[in-house]
Length: 83
Image (cartoon, rainbow, N blue to C red):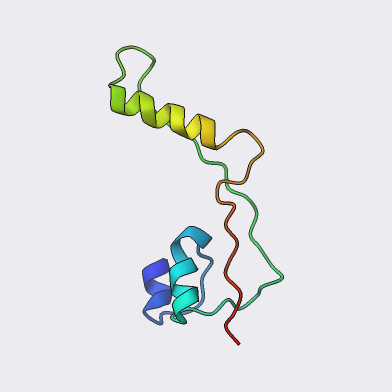
């Protein structure tokens, strides 16, 4: 979706973490600043607790610590329009 909108295919709903650099650079325009989409539930699926590699365990622990229940996944706001 991000690439389609960036290449002029039309209008789309894009996560802030993907589009913020393009908004700042003027490649995209935030059309409806008073509107936002509903939060999306994200699940992490991995094999049971048996023999997780240290890298997978570290990733799971990081996600748990940085995303407590009820917290929005991305707290960054969309940058203001340049005047």
